[in-house]
Amino acid sequence: MKFLGWIIALIFIAIFILFYNFKYLPVETERIKQTDENRMWQTQIQELKKAKEQVAFKKVFTFDELFPGPTSFSLMPKSETALRAIVPELQKLSGAILICGHTDNTTVISSLRNKYPTNWEYSTAKAIVVLKYLESLGIKSERLVATGYADTRPIEDNKTKAGRQKNRRVEIIVRSP
Image (cartoon, rainbow, N blue to C red):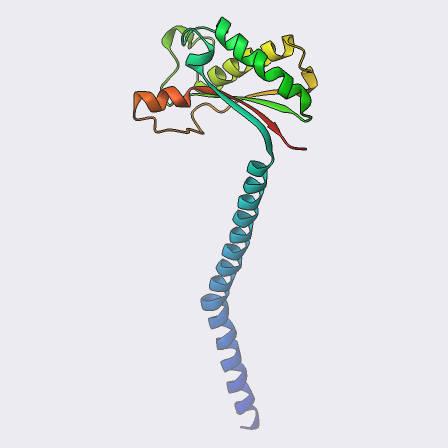
């Protein structure tokens, strides 16, 4: 009889532990997971804010300003003049020069699909044309970086012709060191 009280107490403790493990432990684990995820997103936001603040130079050209048509990968004379005009400023700055190609959300023109099956390749190819021209003007190769973002970073709504036209662009960006 003397041990019956202890046995009942141990049974209650065991029931409490089981109840806690099945009921509250998963809730606590989920809360910790959400807190960690929240911290991660806050860090990401802070890094993006810093990156945005660190832009020392940015120039945006639409494809229509650079190329005579969607199938062309040759710069127009007026776009060469515009690119030549920014070279002195680029040479004054230190750091990598990012040349970012962007497209709208339409598929690549059928005549180009064998060479550029998706907007990833197409946007990168447009950026590389600009990179090679800047390199020919004396910008050091080790400073130049070309990348294509396809349609992943629109600046306008792709539902309108004007929006799609603005999304088809090449950005030249120099970040502050």
